[in-house]
Image 1 (cartoon, rainbow, N blue to C red):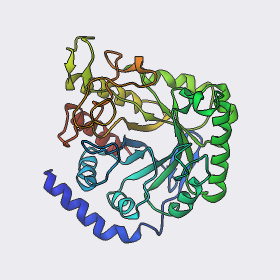
Image 2 (tube, helix red, strand yellow):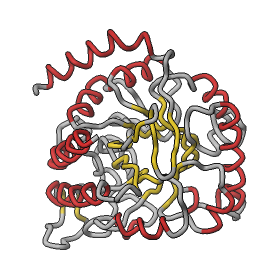
Image 3 (cartoon, helix red, strand yellow):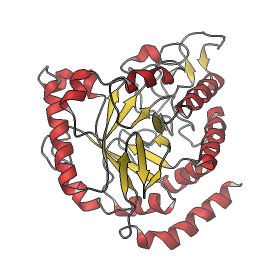
Length: 339
């Protein structure tokens, strides 16, 4: 299908569906290890999305229509964002594309829809009936940063669990999740009973499935990979892949990771692959694509164990498809046909 045809499909969908964005919203629930939408199992074929233009550090939705067309082509049904989208027209366009959203809230965002001030609930009450919403997400890998919580990570778990309770009291139609760095330990689980679905940012080379028996041993709740994937730059030659920009290494790694994600025997509810587009803002000069950067648990990055933070997209900053795009597309569309 041509890019022009995809744009036309998206436009027609927007025309007929946007008027219904705030009515007849889907009900999202949890049953056992399953995430359900309107009572039917929902498998996340998703993507992390934080579109920052060249030369900027601020997110912008100026390319949203183009991005949604590419997402539809790739079989993406869920977008995970790291901060709330306070623009109904953006939410409407995402909903019109038939894509759901996992909306993330930070702890301390200077009082703007954050957990510390409690203003996050204002956003939830404003948009909880919007059909684009899949789940509310609290924090991103905060377990790696006790220094943000007076040196005691228990302060975060207390705040997260309390925020989840507030959400449940205000919105019974959407589960609460968190993006935890790898497997939550006993402390995290015991202090956070109000988390409905555990998202996990898992970078274990190309073996994310190694977390499944670990998870089933400690919890009966649903889980999904809130981040997983590979970058397209090899910091050094490894596993037969040459140093330098290497889209084949990324494509090969993502193929294995995604295949193993969806072969979970009902344990894993899917993945929001990291990420949609390269991020030139992350490692240096915002006007160029830099090598380097830092990520927690970086030793698990395929195949060189070196995270290059500006090379994780399935498309580049200009929206050109990388080799991994067609890998994602094939696996996601195949998964969609199974549902």
